[in-house]
Image 1 (cartoon, rainbow, N blue to C red):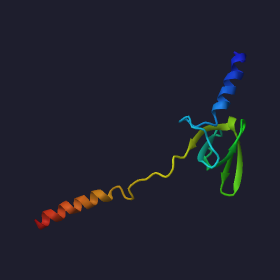
Image 2: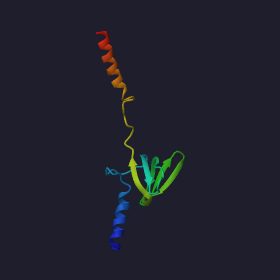
Image 3: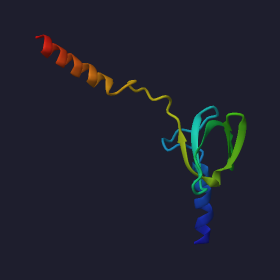
Image 4: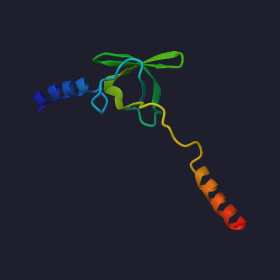
Length: 105
């Protein structure tokens, strides 16, 4: 059992710097990191750099080092989500148009 633990751990550590989509992390990317600490809020910032044991996260004016072994979830930002400013606004405009046309006509 023990002889399988070291290769499995090495394989896990080697895969941590990659995002679930299979793309490699690059410095400058916006990421969110959840660590193994219970109840801790996620850390959000820009990836400064990473190596085989540590990830450095730039947050505001601080540079935090996070051991890869402590990372539970790593999410990479896909960019700004583009949504309609007021989702219900279109419904209101259509409903107003229908009511207005029925009153006039």
